[in-house]
Length: 302
Length: 290
Image (cartoon, rainbow over all chains, first blue to last red; front, side, top):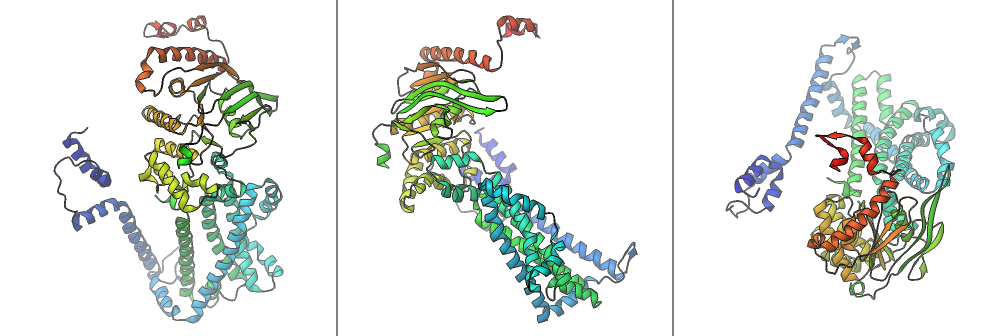
């Protein structure tokens, strides 16, 4: 195994392990000079080949989607589905350039984001601690769980009439519906995370002198974090679903209202613009959560 | 640091009239019955026995995780009432906190004791240095090999300067080569710290190689079947495992455990029974092959 030929061969055939290859004693008299920029760039390319490939294919796939959309709308294809009135990508782009200079459109977006922010934050602030406490104290679990299980299957949209009755202002009822949408996924996932905490880790902490409070902070909470973040990601998705539904039904502002209003006013390009805006905002907010998760859980970075 | 290394020998474990049973639908089931063991200060004692004999149950009772149904567990005359940092524990599944770096894991016990950050960082670094792990202090446990994880586990358990160290099949998940190295490391640490050790294993060689004394347990309900002193001189070398003295001890323990394992498997397998099987293997019967 220590024969130089074998070592060199294994280095050549496995570009991904260059770092290890360097650490082992060089088989031949290797030049001591630092690797040139070209070598480093080549190595970087080899190590990240899979990622680059995914990005390239992703871009091509999005372009293909736009192209198909363009062709279907330019030729007004009618094949069961009717593309007669569907706006073309160029028409949507035109209304986009107009909209970004329109303070009203920006206000719709800002208001929707604000509702998401308040509703989702409240859900996280209530849902995560409640899940942690329910996971730790049986009695709380036994009291809260049945109620949660009954309310959980009710879609947030079904809450709209009740929310309008419950809350004095329209704004509050929309935030409430957003809150409800994200609350249950957050609660359920936190609870699930708590139920999966390895009891051996709790014992290890006890053996090292940890008391109840420390065990909660140092073991139960960090151990549940991956599931808490799953709950936050799912909760964020449902928050958008609920928000848009609430805005369409009872709103006066917001991107959901904008989209519905565009339909009523027969501004077809704006419908697609509203939809794309919702998609981009939803994507952006779940990316924020994922980023926060990576910041909070550095041990899960690969 | 010095305080840990030069502490006067203490950590006298005493388990008296111990039994432990748990409830089931068929009534109480005895896991361990009528057991007395002790570990003298600074002594290395192992418990071996067939699987399911209750040796881990006994260890968990000493750790304070389980309450004896009858009898008492004391350490230096004080009754064990729950887990405490006085009794360090090392688990088979390593049980390092995945969200803490190697150093933070080692620091944990000191943090719980309220030691200042800079002080416990220094203590953890020194200990990791002794275990040859200084290069890995900032790594998360996931990145370590099994042997390294368990070294961290041992260092973490020792960091608070416990009176006794309890180990529950700590090397059971390691490959044979790593296990031998870990046994050597554990012996070295034990000799430096002069700490009392109670070690649970199903590996007879491991028990003999490490211990001053070995308790052999019966099949469930577990009790002490025999207590075997290991008079091999220290420091012990790997080569000793071939000596006639070692092999004699091994044969003795082996036959004790074999009897109990057969009982644990729920029957008496006699040689006659074996012959009755009459299985042909390349022209030989199974009984011949055995």
